[in-house]
Length: 368
Image (cartoon, rainbow, N blue to C red; front, side):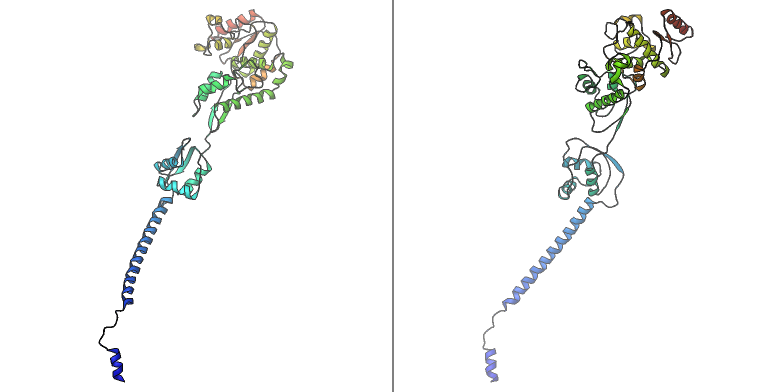
């Protein structure tokens, strides 16, 4: 029986090769390679993630502030390049993809104050808030001509004196006190200090100045000018502009107003030097003098040759002159002349008295 078993186990033939053992060895090698590849991919992914994280949120926190200006019409890609050039973000391409996948924008043009080496999330949040509202200060003193106001406007960033003057003289913006046949806003822009916003343009600024003038004039009762002084509201504004151009001390305004009203009532030539200066182009001669030759200038504004009021105001009147035009001081004066160095005038009822005042002023060294 033992021999039979032996014969069965050793019949002289080779047993078949164990195929499973070879497949196991190849499978093991593949698994090892796969493990290495996976490990490498993990390492690459971790390295890429760390690199990307460093680009999105640089270590060390944000740096110094930097002013960044984004022009109108700049695309997100263009904004990314500007930010990268200024050192605000570390990489323009990464920032562009960050915005695309994390959301943000569209961003507004304007001026921003950002920090160098900022986290991209902080930059997007700052851009989403919009640009800083930078206001500019415009001061318009009393007594300026429209052209002089436009020159001051032209000194502001983004503003054109030519465009401002075009709007102010074109008739597209109007005062409620402006006659239908007058397009110019000469004398109808209220003089004060304005804070000019970043979204305002020349037309918006003109509208605001006219609205302010109308509000002040209405508050002073200019709608009732006819009943108060026998002049239309616009004529009373012209008188206010003459007062503003002539008065040098506050106490003289109401008296100068009375002289103008008295002369108008008596059909006398106003003979106001400021109108001659305006007719000459608005630039006074040295020392503010008016020569006899100036009195012959051919212009409707020359009140030495033309009766009545000039056709428009000659300057922007302030509140005090607007008040004086409607409330002249009682008196019979028909003349006035500069009598003191500070600009105080002497007022007279006759030409003889007026000439005497002139002589007295000259004798004291005052140039009338």
